[in-house]
Length: 548
Image (tube, rainbow, N blue to C red; front, side, top):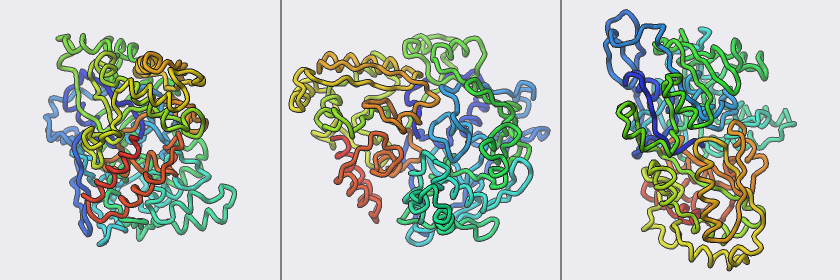
């Protein structure tokens, strides 16, 4: 899922509070390392955390161990105010496609699984799961849990939610997450939105069934040992059919939404803030937090000012120019949290239109960008220069040594040669190109530097095109600009989440509609591979094609 890649976290809260919140907030985010996936025929028996229970003297918080109740703030001060860089365009699990929506959905809904800090899935609503011998079927056993209104959560709630997610009438922007993996998913999603009979037949034939109220079975088109990690994503959260059908388009509004997560929706002011309150029926007990407030602040400088004046408690994305001062300020030194992410920030091209239908033009631009200087001078060395799409820590990552001539590295002379061979010597005759980006999080600073590099090294002029963050990705999917900023953060630590899901020929995330027969063939061979080593090698070969 797309999200911001480089940041410093600032937080003035007690560490126990940070850990409890971040473990839930970043449920779908990679944090470094490599995950191993359940093997054939294995059963996962995940442990379940227990929420803090006032009055017991000790409070157990998921992921943090036990803390003394005396160390907790009084209830009226149990408020956490978190900056969001853009508004959650939707909190409907079936319609979410960016980090702001995912962040809120993860608080309102609980999935079958959740991702631990070591990137391994553990049960959330699922008590356990069992694969068949060849990993083409999985059976989940559910815990006894409730919706926020007290009704039991059943396997049928997941069946309905996934049918709705894939139903073409829903218009989900992220169906490639499971389309092609689950048996019958492509048939359902590709059905005509006006053919009700065909859709209902395809829904009934989808390889997801409730064996009974607490048993969910899923059939796959291919071995899918990494599915427990996919099941942690907000898009696959359960939803109640009666709530959706009675509420219609307003089913996610305050007073109508019914979830099964740790929080419930108390108030929502579009473009400003979202206020959540504890779910009294949460299966691990209601959270100690009395309010969780997400405040939309698109400008990094404004967000930092809000943090300094104690108007927010967690701020991600400090303005790059402020980083050295914050690192050296005694007031803030013990409030910085940092770590790695499995994510890549990149620019895409609309490959169906000139000039970017020409691979040499794309290669020229890639070679004309000085990533190292951009990282050091503009971003104060928070991110690292990327030479391939799949980042270190995920199988299939392409090192510069392995990439050879395919490596995307700064080479202005080669860039000039490639552009000349494409018919634009020294940039002559190059058409007007607009570079689109969402107007937050230092994207403008990066775009300005890239703009300068392309002018200096290729002689071409790029017009910057900042756009509203809340609707940015839905816009570029519907009407793809010639050149656009985007990025990818691992939903789960497996190369399937990078190659097929982002650049697969049928992927709804492949905004630039790039296709290559060798790339597609290698992806197909990787999906059919029987060993982890063979699979990783094939994904790396596919990555080499992508880099070229």
